[in-house]
Length: 304
Image (cartoon, rainbow, N blue to C red; front, side, top):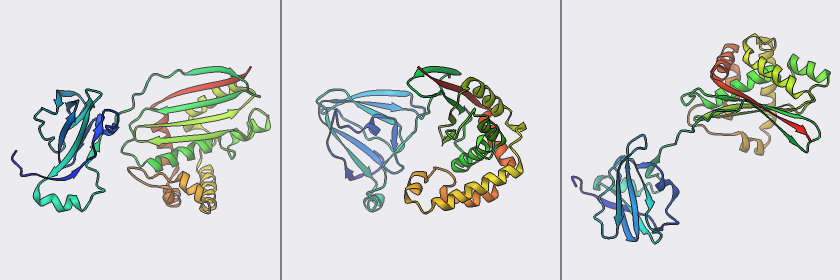
């Protein structure tokens, strides 16, 4: 080996059952960190991988094997090859890095690559019968566009503003349906935004689920022409949202459940500033990002 290496951390002894799950998946060591496996009993399979997770080479190691060092940033994974496996892992570094490594014991020594979540084909409509008092309708919109580089909290807020304008209690659509008895206050909106997936779900109790599903889905597809998506209505919804934010700051439970640090961008505490900056054009752009690249489905529950 070209480098003079010294050990700075040894992990506990693992068995076939206790070998940590992250080490069984694709991972690598940090810059300046070498790793060395020691097999005490049994056997272990070591897989050399490329950055896409493809197997480049496969090795079977036992206590009699001459196991080489794992180089820094080399992608790999391991798996038990026998039930009686006992092994441990030692991390090494160069002498000049020793004190820096020892003084940061909490530093993670491995980087793990998130697997992409496959998007399976959707079933556009579904209906089931259950023991419920009245029919229930759910409409889901799954975004298919890659949003990994977007400010996730801001994107979440933009979608919430759009769908609240269209279907919230201040919208003309909701008021008309409520007054005619086709919809009640059970209408709810759920938005989930993650670098690997994002979706919007509307759920409601209604006596006319088929008609409302058609009406809502058509409105979503034609959101640009919706009579509720206006500058004035956006100001109303933003004011309402800001008021709810101020009221909720008195609740530690609300802060704990709503504060979600994201890999990139804003958090709950940036909401006032974001509401001031967001324009109708921003909301419409987010609508295009979701709806123009989406799969839309509905599910209806009918009483037995």
